[in-house]
Length: 317
Image 1 (cartoon, rainbow, N blue to C red):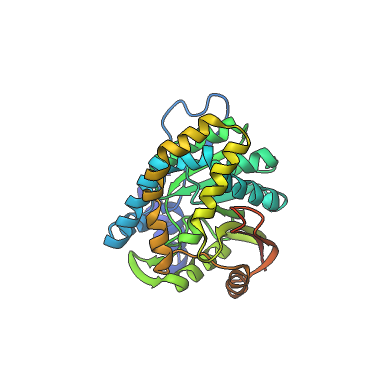
Image 2 (image 1 turned 90 degrees about the vertical axis):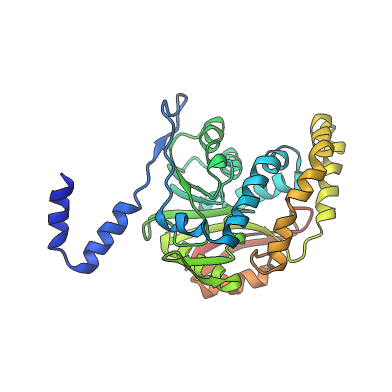
């Protein structure tokens, strides 16, 4: 059907219906099939107008740049040498696996590390993945990570954030996951390119939007540090594990790149102290989840992340 024909058809529909159709057309993402010969051509990233407006905001621009640097210089290091980071992903994957369903959103997916852990636990039911991250260079690596984890299904690559409405239709996904990811950095909320909420209120808006995209009884599974985590203990756990398990190559990497990585990670502490990142106890998370239409299925504290990790699986009530 031609564009002119579509425009004439829309003209005769009620305003609310026209607006809904236009929104759905502008938020159509491309899915790609993962197989042994994945993507003979370069994948397309979906980035809606809202995100393009958000990243122009001076404060958010600096925040995104900090994450770009962290993903480039630090993410590969923690994925290969940090026992606390890896154990957090594994714990969340085990607790969430039976609730994931067929259509999954990974909010703050990075290079696809958590989905890979989930697929190693089981994840056989997953047919579609919305991989969402602010860093397109990290998104580039997601398809290969899924292929190496023997994933057989579709993936959509979305450059976006937890700071505005997700470019996903209402009630269309089975689960949303965020492993030390986008959910805990939902410190700003934008509508129409304008900043309308910050700090805890922004997190509430994000949780409400996650509720919107989930199907009835859909699952939200996420992990985050406890309030005021002891980063020194996390570092000691990581180094101690490498020594104990005799991983000398990884130990060398941790020593060689550890100091620069610590400096590049400092911005995370700053935004948390300023209230734009959410390191909460289980009771605080429970209150917020109940307020935004969820009920907790399972929760744990202290089982991972050098005994400072919070892991929660909740259901859309």
